[in-house]
Length: 161
Image 1 (cartoon, rainbow, N blue to C red):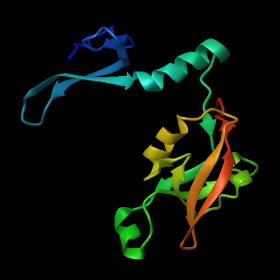
Image 2 (cartoon, one colour; image 1 turned 30 degrees about the horizontal axis):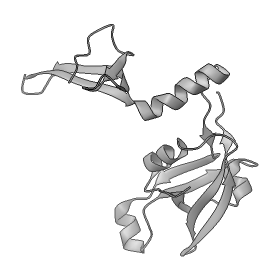
Image 3 (cartoon, rainbow, N blue to C red; image 1 turned 180 degrees about the horizontal axis):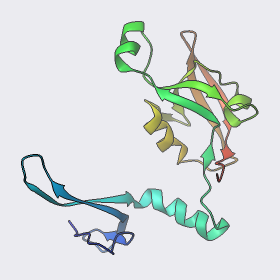
Image 4 (tube, one colour; image 1 turned 135 degrees about the horizontal axis):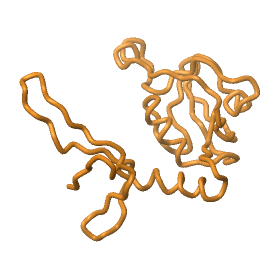
C-alpha cells in the first residue's frame, strides 16, 4: 500500500523487498452517491508491461509493438453459447497486406489463440500481443466455419499514428 499524491504519479511502485513492481499512473478520489469520501485507490502499470516500453524508448526513441492489422470485437458469451461458438476475438476486418491478411485471417473468423496464449476477447488478444515484437513469427488459431485452423503469422510493427 503506497500513497499516490498529486505530483508523484509516474514514479516507481516498490514491493516490501525494494523491487520496482510497477509505475504509478493515477489516483482516484471522490465522493460516492451516499456522500462517503473515497480516498486511497491508486493505479499502476505492472513492471512486466513497462520493461518493454522502456527498452523501446531507449533503443528507438518511441514505443514499438507487435501489430496484426485486424479490427476485432468480443464475441458475446450469450450468443456464442446459443450458436455453439467459442468466446474469442471476432474478426470484423483485416487491413489489406497487413499481418493478419498475409496469414490468411478473414472477416468472421474468431481468434481463440495467439502464440500459445488463450484469447477470450480483445483484452486477452492485446495482452498476448505484448509478448511479441514486430517481425516475430508465431501461430494463431481461428475458428472458421465451425472448425479450428492454425495459421502462421509474422507480426508487423505497430503504426506510430
